[in-house]
Length: 303
Ligand code: HSE
Image 1 (cartoon, protein in one colour):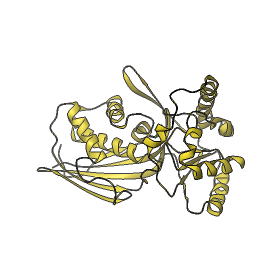
Image 2: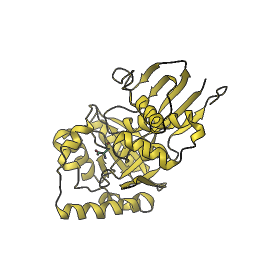
Image 3: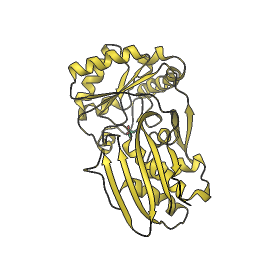
Image 4: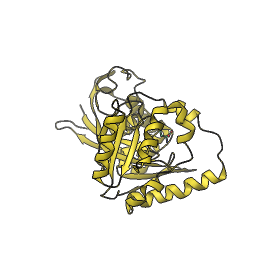
């Protein structure tokens, strides 16, 4: 019998201008425990998604484990999975990225003799998720730049400046990433492309060296406006915060909001404002997670 436990961070993707490329891991975690059993699949879910997430073979963690086994031609053992979820579902906080990264790490733990590289883990996770901007920080932590070329997905992990104090404002409602993506145009004006190239390059500098540049660095013309009609309250909240010089952006595909504050005092002011003006939104003052998904083999279990 093998018993494994993986802890996976929430993530915020895009970070404003870095559409489908930039992501950040946040110190807010789901925990999945796996035990091999004689045969079959048993899933129990506590916390977020307990009333909605699948408990059969369509479960995203299970499908991610299976993808790894299928990719290397190995036969799946019977599996008991216990999910202790904290990351809200459908809010743009990387719950599906966490499920995928967690599933891939559990599979890697079951197939320990294969000694998968970081690159292979990212390839499995991206194959499941479709784009690497959430799974890269979920797997590796920190701030990640992810890109895809003809050989597959890649990532570069960077250390976030110590002064950055992230704030996630969790929307009271859910939003489908599929719907958000359907609102994107096929092509964008050249001037908007140039605008985002400059801002996303600046954002890497702001997040690693110069937090004082964060307001300009978080401007975007590639996705947020196109999606605004599907999440009007998100738009309203971002505009009011930015008017007060809080660098707010849509977290992932929304509808939650990420504020990349350069110091803790500004973060307190933003929390106070949200409490007063958007009282049904939950404010989470979070640290950046630097470690990413972490796998533990429980004592007394073999491989
Ligand atoms: N980059 C993705 C998007 C993140 O904005 O659609 C959500 O998975």
